[in-house]
Length: 349
Image (tube, rainbow, N blue to C red; front, top):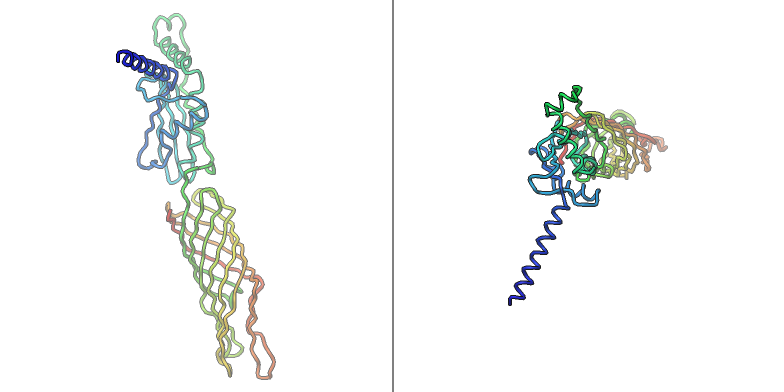
């Protein structure tokens, strides 16, 4: 029994020694992250520590209060799309070792992730003990009257480090999908006889690392084409469509996009004023290219302005029989049609 107890105590002692040795050879940096509710979606402290240690391939951070190096990271949101990360380095005795600021105007706070991990990895990759000791020695030397009398130091102007600016299009791994809903008033030329007013509803979904995809649907007011006063045809068009916007750019509150897509609809014609009136429904299928500008009014609401050119692949030809028995054309869609639109967009996410 004594032998078992002796072995157990010895084993416990070995584990304790190994644990102490691991702590001694382990992390020597304390990271403290400060944030408010506006930056809750920013990177967490534990996740940032793992990212730094993965880059350096060793244990860096510790939970001990008295670490040779302490890094205070303050995350803040300065505007609708502005993020900042302020880094302050301190030695164990409280000596300030430097500051660094990282800013970005990205769509999501996670645009700072890669730069934060890299900057912190570079800061702690230097021989830590030598760095802290050197800074502490310099601070003690500057504070010593005897040293100052022997070797008077020249006053130096305090220099604030320039902030690092992360491009707005930097990789943002946790950026949510953008979902927008919109409604627009339309003015079309050559889709129906003359100029026709209409409306369109749309729902756009943009994944974090993919183009914007949009579903759309609309309808135009009925337009007439007459052969004589009191006779002719009334035309109406309703459609559904899908588009993708591979090109998108942003300048302040203005966002521009270039899109391509297709629409499928029904073109209905109803004759009136003839000896025999009939109705006919034809397929309307067109490819289109569209350019738009979105002016952000608030963080979630924007005014949308766009123009698209449609190329119908199915051009319905509507004819009638004149009193002399000859067939006459009543209406045929143009090979290229133009559509202008203006409306509002609301960001749902």
